[in-house]
Amino acid sequence: MIIQDQESTPVTSTIVADADRLDFFPTYFGKYFMAGENLLYVHADRFVQNYQRGYWNFYTLSNGGFFAALDTDKEQHVVIADNYCSERMSAEAAGVTLMLFVLGRLLAARIPENESDRFIDLYHKLREFALEHAEAQAILTAID
Image (cartoon, rainbow, N blue to C red):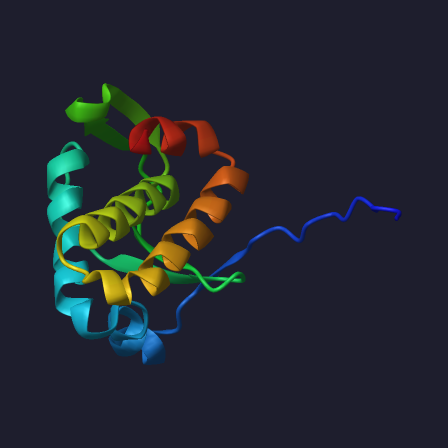
């Protein structure tokens, strides 16, 4: 049997059009969309230094994943004391980090076991994107 190396296709992100923004959180979080959206903003307030709210861009991933990121070119300082993390990263990398925390928190506290497979899959799809990201090391340090 011959096993050929297959190049994997990079996971790409696409910004969600304004017309589709209202469906973003319900599409991915289902009946937990209010909890998921709230956790995103709570985690941003907790982990992003000097976070002062703002407009969030929503992204879909070519592998079926998703995330949200502040619409800014400013570097974000993410501090997660429990992980001994103090990383400066782009808004996109911070958004990926935050959404990984949101998915993990939902799985740990709110999603019944019989509904967890979809959220586990979404976590791994986003983590796949994170591993290919230019700031993968900062993201991984934050979620470690």
